[in-house]
Amino acid sequence: MSSTKFILGLFDDPDVMMHGIDKLQKNSVPIYDVYTPMPIHGIDDKLGIKSSRLGYAAFMFGCLGGTTIFSIIYYTLVHDWPMNIGGKPAFAVPNFIPATFEWTVLFTAFGMTITFFFATHLFPGRAPRVMELRATDDRFVIAIDAKGNIPHEDITNILKEAGAVEIKHNDRKYVSYE
Image (cartoon, rainbow, N blue to C red; front, side):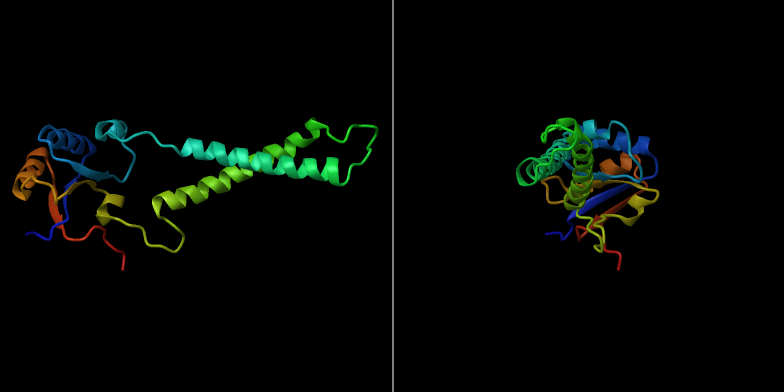
């Protein structure tokens, strides 16, 4: 039994890589992930990746921030220490709007930053998990899980036919920077 965990096909052109994805899918080879040094339009649809739910998280963080400051202002100015300023009512909603807006934006920004770090495992001080170091520079990488039922030689031949510049058999999931 082979110790290979992933088969990596390295491409030097995004169009050739997209052709390689089509060829692998045509031969029913399951693709683990694709790593590119830049965003490529249409690759998410081709790989069947669902749209992100980060927008829902941003909305919830915004609601939390707005509710928090509105509650603090309401409690402070209406219940705890009501003041008569120029005969205006203590609960004047237009006066609450600027602070509520600012806290909504603040909570959304900090919440999305924390959510991004949590979702991508890129906490400050942690080395990023990279399958092939050149995928961040100049190579387009298709990673295929080698534990499938397709022989490794067949996958290698499909990648060569698709135009892969280099094919690697990794026995580790990620490459470390050390």
